[in-house]
Amino acid sequence: MFGCLVAGRLVQTAAQQVAEDKFVFDLPDYENINHVVVFMLGTIPFPEGMGGSVYFSYPDSNGVPVWQLLGFVTNGKPSAIFKISGLKSGKGSQHPFGAMNIVRTPSVAQIGISVALLDSLAQQTPVGSAAVSSVDSFTRFTQKMLDNFYNFASSFALSQAQMTPNPSEMFIPANVVLKWYENFQRRLAQNPLFWKT
Image (cartoon, rainbow, N blue to C red; front, side, top):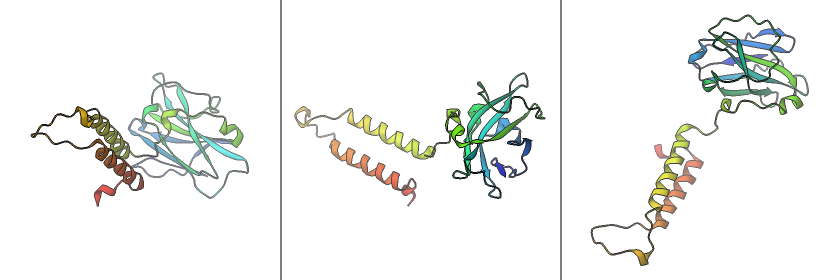
């Protein structure tokens, strides 16, 4: 019913069913995992009005599992990417796996999927740092760089009345910098890799 993917590893499709409505995948060597993809295989859909909440569990310093809600998958959203690199410490959250005797090894984390009503899923709050940004880091960097450059250049803006002629300096009108800034942002929004052509 479910699959789990970690970069550089084989796809896992054999989830361990620990209850009628709960499944887990083992993640050995979890300390070296940054992102995990959880997806439905497409062979068995959720029953009408149902979905699956996705949890990440890692052993704390005493070996006790700490569960954190990552998000969910549904028939309408059959896959999700979660960032787990920042979740390997901190507090757990309420979870449906507490009373289960799930066999685990100390250096192995787990992804748990609990089938629940969609109404119930909508009321759950995943840990904020698990969401993967839809804007890649290059685009974010470029936007921050543009903002920084524009703010820096604008801080030197002078009105014509304030300018003193200096033959050794060149002046660029602030509206030209603003026009360049707006054009670059527009082109970046249309195609983040436009600069490669």
